[in-house]
Length: 363
Image (cartoon, rainbow, N blue to C red; front, side):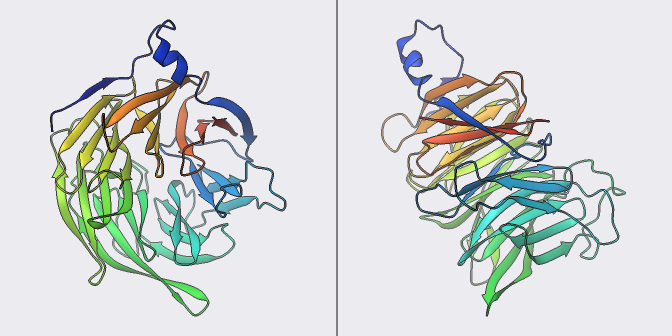
């Protein structure tokens, strides 16, 4: 398929099409957390516990603490505060976080320069701890040159993948034994020379698929062989090296699936699964893309960047693969994450560096 270009440049207000889509979302409210937000790409997580997506929680990281609250009026909603405490180690910095849906429950996974910790969704109980030093994952004299753990993805309901600064991916198997979860590392896989920057996963016609990106701009597509607990490389995209991969998403509604990759150059590129062909390149932002999310039911793609804009793109199975739907500047802030608040994409939220406020936008 030929390369398609889209320009995400704000047009004059006389342009009727843009005038319509810019009114698609309006700011609904702001939710204040206990702590401000760290300067970390994709530093915003969302999880839901009901079909209507009313009891949802938004969470962010600041230094060694993960904080989350429910932005909606839900009686007895929890207030989540989890502090990463490594034994005999000080000054832990959470470098990546994610709620991972597993069999019959959701787990909170936190990564730092010292290792990984897996908790119940609200941090009330630690399920598993993986210490880097004990397992031969060496650091740079305890200095955080680049995030030690970066990128978390749940593969199905029994595997969790973690990206490392070494370019390796750790794969863990999680299973429910009686009333408790047991975790164990089943493999270590490497196809990147540079540090991993993000991971994304989805169930597609090809099975359980994982995408990984690194700081040099290389994207790799993997498939999971569940019986052997092995990640098998399907494709490696090296033609776009030069700017780091900052964000990844997978949409499984288009043919065999699409990997959406955001780059430090401000571009979003869509790659086909399983062969890794580039289907579309979007000149999305004038700056480092710092957040991206996909509404799985509607195909809406959300992005935010250092240029101060949050934008929404419509992915489609027929007609143009990607179209620009919405663009709005968020003033006086450096956005560090953006997430849809339901699988339809009817609302989204963004967070900003050094601010405790989560801004919510809705149709």
